[in-house]
Picture (cartoon, rainbow, N blue to C red):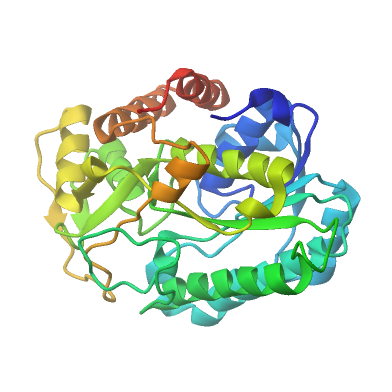
Amino acid sequence: MLNPAFWKGKRVFVTGHTGFKGSWLCLWLNHLGAQVTGYALNPPSDPNLFEMARVAEVCDSHHGDVRDLASLEAALTAARPDIVIHMAAQSLVRYSYEHPVETFSTNVMGTVHLLDAVRRAPSVKAVVVVTSDKCYYNEEWVWGYREDSRLGGHDPYSGSKGCAELVVTSYQNSFFSAERHQGAAVVGSARAGNVIGGGDWALDRLVPDIMRSLLKDEPTLIRNPQATRPWQHVLEPLHGYLMLAERLFADGHAFASGWNFGPPEESERTVGWIIEQLYDMWGVGFEWKRDANPGPPESTFLKLDASKARAHLGWRPKLDLKTTLRWIVDWTRRYQAGDDMRQVSLADIERFMAIAPNA
């Protein structure tokens, strides 16, 4: 379980804090009493959770690109963080086909720059580098990928995430190893499934596309209704990242490796099932439409085996998939009604923390 007392007063440096996951993480860290410094480009969508929830008010927010080593290192050095959580990324598969150089330079060299800055920052004790379930070479298996599965990818985004994992391993061995670098930061990586939740407005992502269409009262265009993904609420992997950071900080190199944070098998559903559930919860009767422009190929089946996190971190998912979808609908309805979305989001964080994980 997460230890709230651990985070009180901790200085935490978060890259990608203006994104969907980064905004939720900053709200959570501030709620726990941490001193948060964020480093990122402008929010990647309009609207966006960062502005909706006024996240800049709860952290020291810096505008910058992880591809700019000097700028990144200056911000990190000034923050003197105890813990670094690296989430800045180009995170969209379809976009990666159109912008492969940007995708590789952000996801690979951005990770290089972050870790290189950390090795010259003596205050840092623990680093969590967030990659993706797509870092694994997808064999279209029916079983989940484990942390020692083959890395790689058919598309620029997946390939860049596999490369980022190799960067982490290289820096672990070269600059952060227990044997040769006593007192250096301890680095681990985290891989999550398809993360969904209130406040995600990214383009070319299923749940944001559905919620936008529902707010406009029009059918959603769907590319691949049979694709199966490991859906999970955004707070589930964030909970894992925080737990991993605690263990890296307290227990050191025993936890300096890759970790999967994926949902249980019953949360692995098709795109078609997700849209039917959200339509029903929203209360509409029209049907979705198939997109005549399906775009580049995407994987059909992908899942993670999170046994390692369960056994060694004590991390377990808290929400079943229908509850996750209900929380998204409720969050979006509150947004539609003009409510204070920081308070709405904090209320979700508080009730998530109050739920005991499944055995």
